[in-house]
Length: 229
Ligand code: CA
Image (cartoon, rainbow, N blue to C red):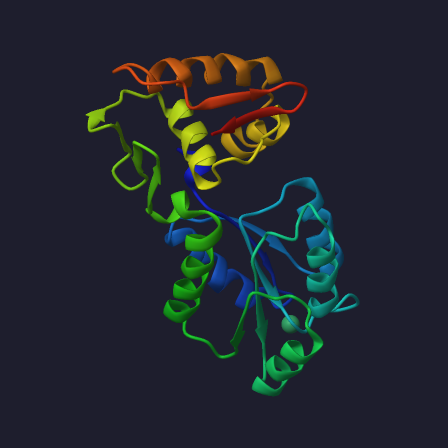
């Protein structure tokens, strides 16, 4: 189930604040990666893009604003929501004025409950399957909370990997995913899996989706990968 756990990159240079926030995020089911400064944050994002980034404004050397600006100009990370955390509301006004592309802003001291609500609001938009949303594509319904999938009213039997694959496809119907992107999203980067494994599980998913009849909704895109619809 690890891959449905939303991943968060927490960028905060003050150890006490970093630990408190990491503790709360982990308690709430997040896989947390921590960075102490902007350089480390940029390096970690290059290794594996998280589902969301919490970014402190005041960081040594490379500021939070600069990190945000860089991430929002790169095509590979532009879609990752960033919540900026700042010490003063005037900073938030400035960050808005600078148009760094941050998706939301929180002022210290913030309530953890409020911050979590904002994190979830961002994920509902970008990674709905990680926050228990129901996804729908034509006659297929996927409930990410109960892990039930139905097609035309019939419940489908799916293995955990096939479920994660389908969640990924259903979050963005029509998007073409390369095998490498599916490996990152569904298996995670820590595990070594051959790209051919993706084909095997795509085959199983196709079979599962048609177990009560219906057309195969998955599309093989030659030289590119797979898409739903
Ligand atoms: Ca700071």
